[in-house]
Amino acid sequence: MITRSLTLFSLKKASKILHQGGIIAYPTEAVFGLGCDPLNANAVHKVLILKQRSISKGLILVAADFSQLRPFLAPVSPLLYARIMQRWPGPTTWLLPANKKAPGYLRGNSNLQAVRVTAHPIVKQLCDSFGGAIVSTSANISKRPAARNVLSVKHYFHNKVDLIINGKTGELNQPSEIVNAMTGQIIRPGA
Image (cartoon, rainbow, N blue to C red; front, side):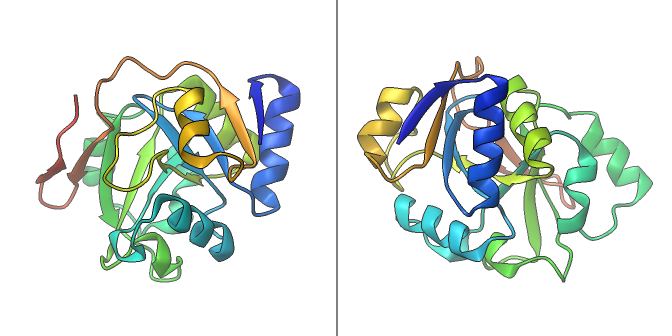
């Protein structure tokens, strides 16, 4: 496991690791996240094993902009697009209808995909360097507190993560709010 501050070198390294099916940890708006290439089933499976998380729960995809999420989503109406963009970029995760051609392992037992356009500068740079959305799930073992720093990531995962990007999390006290964009129902309250 390598720990690096965000530099051009570490961005290229993170992107290479993601493209090769590796797992990275990085600061997000509230906690450290675990990320991988969402189109690499083996990488996603590794993340689920690390977290001891059921595939039935689905995973969040995070992106630098909405265009990076389009391949995973069904077409979004202009009205719905305008509504979600009022809170993006930012710490709101929306549940939107999934593209039927997108991998089912990303959405679990749902026909909705959890997605977020981040405002966190490190995550934006990671997604841009990778060239698309990445899986973003809290860096923790299921039902345990999410890691808020590099030391906690190392404690949870020892040498099982390929790269940890050192940096500060955002100012939120809780992981991102999750809202069903179709109904407005708050699935997980935010900070």
